[in-house]
Length: 107
Image: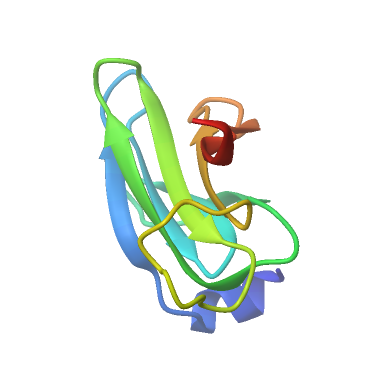
């Protein structure tokens, strides 16, 4: 995702991560984007998975200090509420932007 296109794309569910990181994170499609909390300047971007459809959601969990993003990898199914291989929650380290899938289909 280029700087130009991410600047034109809507940001969904921003999450603030307090000190010592002091950054704002948000999702735009399958990407997690990191912003400077003071200036709003985009600093980094990471793709959660490929393929991805639709928007992802993100939240900050203060107890673990991690970000969690949720999304899906296939078009909507009849039984939307049931866990499927195509749906996932990813743990994102706010310092390194390393992405770890939680493999929710195995829960």
